[in-house]
Length: 235
Image: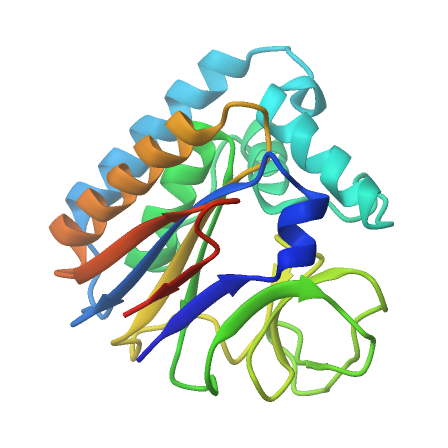
């Protein structure tokens, strides 16, 4: 059983938070897909045209993430939330490189809705994953590295029951051992918004991600919407 939940302190501190959680098995992430690549490129071009010269930091969904980062003591310009980092890369470089089918599906949805979308391989995890404030003693392995770090006390983390951190500073960066790759068969996905009245965006983004996973990764999935009235999902 895979369980994902938000600690009650997170819900109290961030009352506008809404999330779509997908738990998905039977994944096939081994091959590239020309159809997905084209859909991804088309979406990137549409987002570039949509944003134009408007400041990314002033987009409502991004501004809300920046405010959330400041609330738990993190400078959102030094540590950019994942959707802002993606959008800045896109507008600066003109594209976001393909990584693999699962990551590409997540990034496509993230730039479309300007919200945080992430995929986590569950094979290295122990027990439930909880979004909570760090106590500073947990263990985190940065992506692409083999050294262990401790998060800062008070930052928001995703952690399992053995204090293994799979994402630091909420949606800033995930861990090496949770990253999806060609061997990933079971994963959970988080689709999170912080802006006021973001529920419709989160619902639509979660639905879009499910459709993309079904079409391009052959996924089977269950999903739920989480927020103040529903903080936990198990499958």
